[in-house]
Image 1: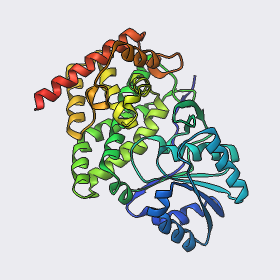
Image 2: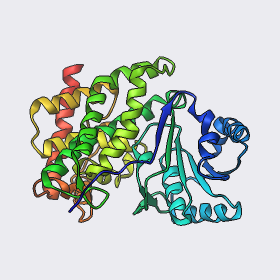
Image 3: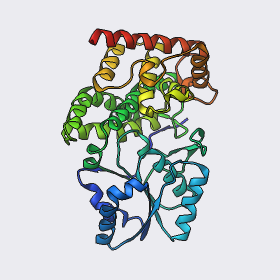
Length: 368
């Protein structure tokens, strides 16, 4: 089987880059459909309109319905044809990106992703998570290619809620450990191949940047959204390095456990990356990682405010039934838990979750 690395065609990051979106989009088409939320139009609509006017190109805003469902994807597809658009631009967060990816895949037009947050590694990938109308995960869609351009305005990201960027650190935290597990098990990545050394190296670089710059970036962002070099580094780690890393190397138990946790309604108010962070701790317990490694991850999570216990993701009453729901979901036949380099069972996952929670409690107590 071939070894593969997949990435967006172009990635641009820097302060004020949203003002240039019209110039960049002009290279891909004459008339862009901008998929964006109502709040996004209020915050960034004038910037986008001016940029397109300066570039002498047409655009039309299309207000996102709130859920990346099959119905919403069809609404966007219909709008592309009705507005005679030859390019789709997703501006906002993950579900907007996933909808834009699926619509671009169906209409065979170029795709630009312009995040306004750095909360997940979704912007760079060729994967769409499809939800039901009531917000439950229904399916995953692998689109034919990664975005043509990912445009990160670091000033916009720095002004977003700090919790969202920290959540992105939680998602990025899984990248190296899951890539390592997939390499050990010789599992497939998301391009129907095996990982290259390049993908593994980017996954490791993602982790190293988190350890070096994560806390410094959080402090800077809490100081009124200061755009320091540490913040720039974390934006890159959360978005580009984690995006290429997970897609080119694969996911493992951390994301599978997150999927299981997401089955419990108590966790629904917590972000994806926050649940993934706890999943990382559980994965390290599951694979009996060295104590030094587990301590480093626990210390990092506590320092930036990521969850290390079940109560920190809303699970104050973790009954055995709830625990087994999480564990059995994580071990579903098509989930990534089976990319671990040993047999994984619901009982092993349940035990790892309970132990991870206790390790987290002890770490919090030691810091008190």
